[in-house]
Length: 475
Image (cartoon, rainbow, N blue to C red; front, side, top):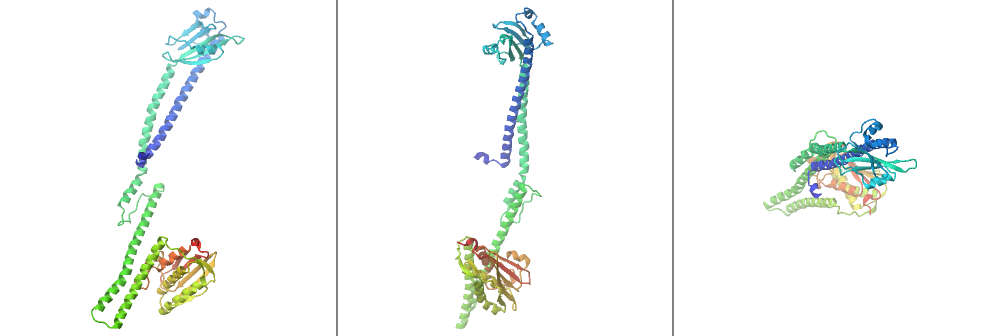
């Protein structure tokens, strides 16, 4: 079986249906051969029995001397024709041959003792005499008087030469036809399997050419709608996902490099300037404060990356507790008000539902802060950011709406990706660029969802839907 499993699929398919076809043809051929043999033999048996019964009913006394000298003429009169190719004999109750006609080539024709014994017992017996050439098929019929006593027996036999020749020809035909049919089917089947699997070979060759450098390659097998077409479509979709993943990895690496290189460049530049000449204490303090700010920024990036890495590996457990949703929103409102005031943005919390839910308060607070922080950053002065919440069907929905620059339609599907910023011109906004990614993970960790509706230059609406009972993470 291991050797068979190593064969190409087209060979395995060919051998499979070749084997099945061989079995079917052999069984069918054997059945046909057996049926013909039985049918022909039954026909022969019927003919010799009919002849024997005609003869037996015409006999009144096997001792009639007229039978011995003119038996053939007698049979011709009884049967209406001269029996050709037949062996006919009459045997009396003592076992003596009363009359015989032999029109077969065989000379030594004697029935077995069992045959005669059964016939004298009143049974009609069929037998095939194998010891003569050609073989002989014979029927032995008892002749009874009115008292059901066997007075004599009639034996009628016929040569099986034609029968044997017919069966031999049939066997030769089958011996030639069956292997020829099997061989033809295997050849045709192999060609059909090869043609059917040609797209698979095309997929294999295409797959060999695909690398991280050319993930844009796709398999083209036309408009096939069969299983191979679906396989090719699935393969292409998988390559598309890999291409997207590689692009995200490359973009992520580029973004991480940029986010970490920028503060390091600032620190290096300021340090080089400070070392060119003596500075006052206040100047050194200013430089060190700038260094501390950039160091804090790098620290936040690294901590956020570490958090997301642990989240990806499911290494973070939520500290589930009952909390007041309204209090949570108002706490975030208080925390973010100063930042909003400094930028001239009006932060509002209204229509806040007074309800309780199960969740990790610290994580949920961070999630909401990240979303509000994003709204404040990308809302110009004199704009507004509004927080609200509603409850229905066992869920609480928290909405954060802003009047900021909005998000272009092509950017919406990437907005929760790590380091992704829809406004590329504002990369130096404070933050790690991971806030919305972390918010998305926290929402999903609570069995909820987060989404956004936005259009360029028309503000954005972030909505967070969380189960009140803690969702799938409640323990």
